[in-house]
Length: 608
Image 1 (cartoon, rainbow, N blue to C red):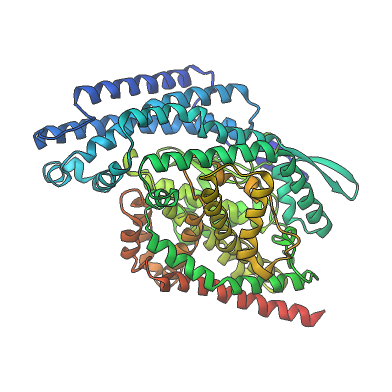
Image 2: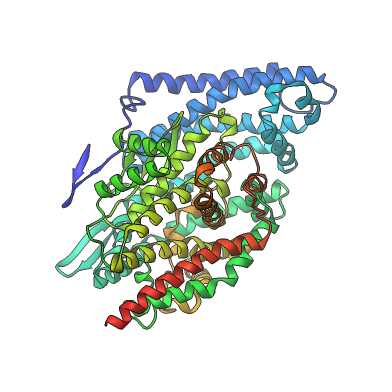
C-alpha cells in the first residue's frame, strides 16, 4: 500500500511474503516452533553436557557435542531473526499497533531463554582446548573466529546464575527503556510555525525540515524540534540514565575495566586503533570548520547556525524524487556490477522499502535482515539529495546481508565497525556518480551534501562519543539531570565543531534525538560510523584504481565480516588500521572535497 503525496506515491514495505498477518496460522506455527526449538536446544545442551566445567572429556566427545550444538543453533537463529524482523516491521512503522507490541513482548521472553543458552554455550567453549578441537573437527574449523572470541569473552562472564538473572531482567530493564524511547519518540508531535500558520507534525517530519530550501522553515523546524525534545526530556533522561546505569553495572560485574573496553571488544578493535583514528580526526577539525564557514558565507550568515547544517545549496536540474532516486541507484549500482544492480532493482520491485514519513513511525533509517539474502529497509524520504544518499546507504546494508547470507547464522554477526562497510561504499558510488554528472550550482549542491554527511560521520559522531564518555564517567556516581545532559552535549559540540558553528545556536537536546544512545547492548554506538566512513573511503579509492579486480575481493570481504577480525580483514586490503597514517589518508580525501567546494563557492561569491 502507498500513500499519495503532492509529488508521488511513497512505498510501504511488503511483509506478506513472510506471513499473511501477525494473527495468521503460519506465523503462530513458526512462533510455536521457535519456542519448541529453544526448549529442545536446552535438552540437547543438558544431554551433551554443554555448560559448566568440561575438563577431562575426550576431545572427540567435545567435538561431537559442538557439532550437534551448531547444527541445532543455526536454524533456530534463522527462525528467530525472521520472526523478530517481521514483528518489528509493524512496531517500527506504527508504535500504536498493540498487537505487534504484544507479539514483540512475547518474542523477547523467548529471546531471554535463547540468550541464556548462548551464554551457556560461550562459557562451555571457554573450558575447551580450542586447538585440539580444531584439529579433530572440520565443522569447528568453520567457526574458528567464533571459538577464539568465545575464549576471550569467557573471562568477562559473570557466574551462570548472574548471567541468567541479567537476561531475565533485561526485558523489564534496558530493553524496556529502549522500547519506551522508540514508542515515545515515534508518537511525539510538535507544532511548527509555518508562514501560513502552525502545523502539528511528527518529530521525524519536523527533523526533515532541516533540508527545506526556505531558511525560515528550517529555523522554525529547529525551534519546534527543540521544544518537542524539551517536552519529552524528563522520561527520555530517565531512560538514558537507566540504560547507562545498567551498562556500568554489568560491565563492572563482568570485569571490564570500562564500558568503552567492552564496546571496543564487541566492535572488534582495540584502544590503539580507536586512538589512532581519533587523533587523526582531531588534526582535521580545522578542515571541517573551514567547510562550515564557507557554507555560512554562502548562506549570508556570519556563523552557521545548527538549523543550516543541512541547508541545501545550489539547485538541482530536476527534483530528487523517490522514483528518480530509484532509477539513479539501480543504474549506478548496475554500472558497478550487474549483481549489485539486479539486487537493488529487486529490492525496489519487491517492496523491501518503507519510505513514507507518518505518525507512529520511527525516525531515521535502518536496514534489517529477514531471511536468506532478503532485507527490509526503513527510511523517512523527503525529496532531496540527502534522502537519495540515505536510500543508497541502506541498500548497501542490504547488499552486505546478501553476501553474509552464504554463511551459517552463527558466522553472520558483524561488528559495528565493519557493518558500515557496504553501506558507505554504496553511498559513495551514488554520490560520486551524481557529482560526475553535475555542473555549476548542482555540483556545488552535491559537494555540500557529501560534506554535510562527512561532517556528521566524523565531527558530530566524535562529539557524540565525547558526550557518552562524559556521561558514563558521571553516571558512575549518580543520575544526570536534563540541564546537565544538555550542558554535557553542548560542551561536546563546542569541542568538535568549534568556530565552525554559531555557539549560540547548537543542539542541546541531541542526546534525546539520537536513538543510538538507547540500545542497552550497544554502548558507544557512535565511533563505528567514523571507522566505517574512513574505512570505506579507503576501499573506494582502491576500487577506482583496480576496477577490474576489486569487486570479487570486496564481496568476499563483506561475506567475511562475521568470521574475521577487523584488523585482519583490513590487512587483506593492504590496510593497517592501527596506523594514524591510514586514517589521515581517508581524511585527506575529505579535505580535497572541501577544496573543491571552496573553489566553486568562490565562483559564486564573484558572481554576486
